[in-house]
Length: 59
Image (cartoon, rainbow, N blue to C red; front, top):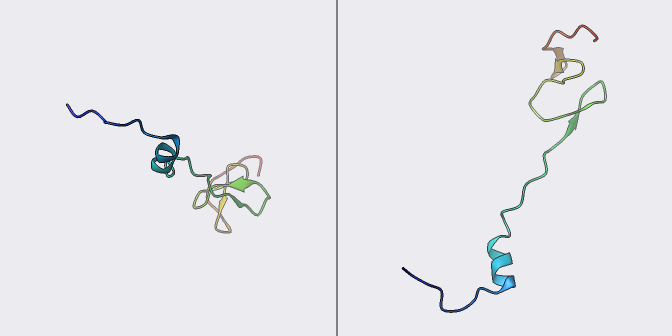
């Protein structure tokens, strides 16, 4: 089995892991003012692209 000859430095380890972070989600705001993930219907009012997509009793 292959074994490393030298210890991996912190900077080399950090450079390798530079793209392993969790991306922050994009947030758009619905017409009602609530934050919503893009390409999804609003949970509070049920609208999507200016039309009513979900039937909400409180809307």
